[in-house]
Length: 457
Image (cartoon, rainbow, N blue to C red):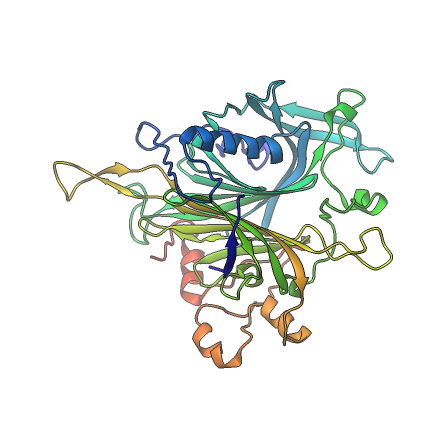
């Protein structure tokens, strides 16, 4: 953890894959059990003291940062376990509050086809498919799947009808946000017939990333005309004002390595909500600067526009996994431009999730009768600004650190087992996204022989 200085008050893939992906559907627990909502009375001085106050705070954060008038339009990009882009869908997410803000309706619209006009920010003709209402949220029901921490949010972990587990992270900045959904599917050890026994792990098989901009649906002049997702042409013609993100810009990898300061919001079932003032992130907590994670068990992807995602390759019972999303929505303002004086921004959200926790029979301690539903163990959101450069670090050292190299040569032998230098991989794909961390030869052979069931426990 960083050196906190003071405490303060503070998917869906595509239309053709809807049948295979149950991301739109309500989660189905392995065993039907009453919902238990944990709440504690400790935390920051102004933190909620009762379950009612907690629900009110969560509803306020949800309607302030996520459920806004308009639609979040973006391109839902789907990546497989190897980090390859396998498909994309243009869609809009509407989280529409009613007049009294006592409920929020969640709907999706999928762009089926479109014809682009000379306008860089809209489609002149389009066919949009509106899906049935996903859910309707109220202050009482929001906490069943959602948890907000400042501008960050986690949805899940949820068990889908397909048997996969879904964990969604979101970060909002100005009129834009980034969402990522990690989906882990049941797997068995090599040599064990799938389905012959309870799953022995949950392995990542898909990640869906969406960079979204809030669009005013009132601007749709006629039915079938939409503004659509953010685009490079739009940002070049009308650069976003300070305070709003730029999705289409080069972000050198060493930009992640700087002095960052700001605030942090943490939550845990036993600690409650807490707010922190962070004077500077220490090296151990600067995971955004280690794109491949701290161990080979971490799956990661660094994407254009300053986006980094990390999650466990495999989640097993008794070992919580950390899902992470880091985003640099803005750069330092250049002298003489409208952004002059603007500081670079860094947003991070991370959630600890647990799954496959066995339910032991009361009559026989050696008999397992099922699994508890997956659970959220902790949530943290960091809102940082760049306050300076790292002292004593050359540009070459920062670039090497961005690629996974350690900085201190004396410590390199200790960390070489967990942090490996990034290896460039040639790809026939025309996409420019980054690749996940390299894997060892043994695991690579397992994946080649049985990509779905090669579980390395």
